[in-house]
Length: 241
Image (cartoon, rainbow, N blue to C red):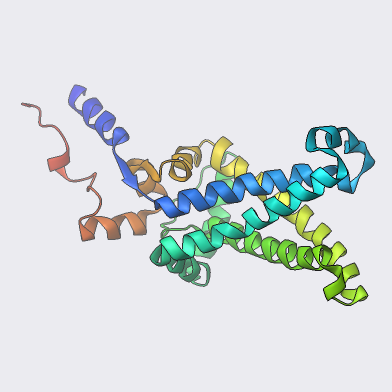
């Protein structure tokens, strides 16, 4: 019993690389920029948040900060693409690759989310839920960026397009906020996915957690020799050790 306890403790301490430094930096900039954009936009949407203006340097300061953050919001895609093109292409490939296991994931995930007994469905680098999250965030980003340009440079676009820009910006703003809230809950609060939060901070996650949540990906990395085989007896202490 003591030997099993030791081996489990050792396995729980093993970390494996999930994300590159480029992804970690891009993710951080994206998150900070989105929160900043949300805060600076609040007093421009409703008078209820006018008390934020003094903190933001007045209406002009808020608009300037919003535009600077808008530029920062665009940068992560280029950072990820330039400094980790392999990781970026893998992300894109995962988003357009859907198999039977992805559909099975949703039914089991709903059970797990509400505390019911669920069946494990093997997943690759991204599970089906993360794919949907990425797709929604991409859609929101496109809406916000495209509509933002028409609002920032109204003289370059027809009046009707500028008006549509305001409407689509609101849609992207509301949908994006809802998606981010769900993303934060599942990555930081939900007990089953919370261990993976270290991935966006250090790039590494617990090996046991990675193996249980992204089994196919983990097993592929084991075959390549990149990750330890946690089931291999050689990775466990012998009784006589």
